[in-house]
Image (tube, rainbow, N blue to C red):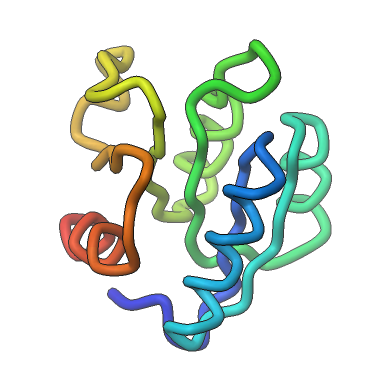
Amino acid sequence: MTLRDRLVLIVEDEPIVALALEDLIEEAGGWPLSAERIDEAFAMIAEHTVELAILDINVHGHRSYPVARMLLALGVPFIFATGYGDALHPPEFEAIPTIVKPYSLADIERAIEKL
């Protein structure tokens, strides 16, 4: 799996990080779609055919796990991103790759290859 020609949902509450991630996705040939809040992510999933997602784990003090559950139910692959090192996820997400900030395009590509 690659980013090329995919609509990629970004759930990230830090604007600078989100903009940098948008640039990386565009550089890889994908189309980024950003949400900075959990409710925005749900709305974007409802409005668009998301093909891949990168979810910050902590979004304005809330975990992104409800969004992850929705993506799982829809069969949309995703990875987690965190600034806190290796995150300990609930059992249902233990197999989901997690990248650690600051990350590169190569880090993202390696993580999505594991999906």
